[in-house]
Length: 263
Ligand code: DGL
Image (cartoon, rainbow, N blue to C red; front, side):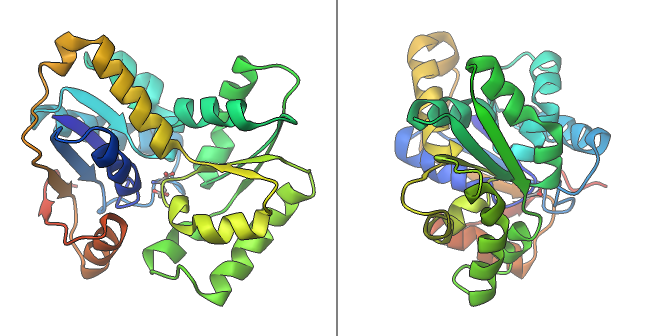
């Protein structure tokens, strides 16, 4: 199975793309809804949670781990890669590759949680890949709760997005990375506020393609994956709101199962 974890429900935006690109492969999802959000927490806590999530998924039969959370990817992906003997994919590399590909002026903006922006993980990866690039970032802590409340088209949400995007617009970015799994849900508003000359990039499509390519090249890993098109969605806490968000993202009734919920 392909094990995917996120701090909560937002990682389902990645799962949605995996469903399209890797049809038939069984997905084992874990959303750490009891401990969400990660974006406001400190590094050691995020690392500890990420290790626990990976252990849980491997115990349940995951042969590949996808860290479908920008915050956990920024802070914990290197440790997860070192600690566990399975292939690990994070969301930063595919988003950075895509941004570099589409950015003509090499002026790239990043929006994400506080922990993601403070980690500078995106900036470092971009600077490793190319020189002469200008990177501008802005944390947007209010966007995750707005999405979780289902405030997708509200006037207040549009105003807040505008306020967060404005400082990046003034830097004349030509590409904007959505460095948070919740933000693709606000993509239409973000696109409108940032303007049509700016390419808006998120990890989901590129990550799914990267994983597909990996499976083609690594048949010994591919063979270990189940392909019965059956999926399990574990969460560490179930509330009506999590259920509503999960259904909204995957556009179907999602059967959430309680798991890995010992605090
Ligand atoms: N999933 C997180 C991310 O992509 C956002 C929610 C949180 O703060 O935990 O960064």
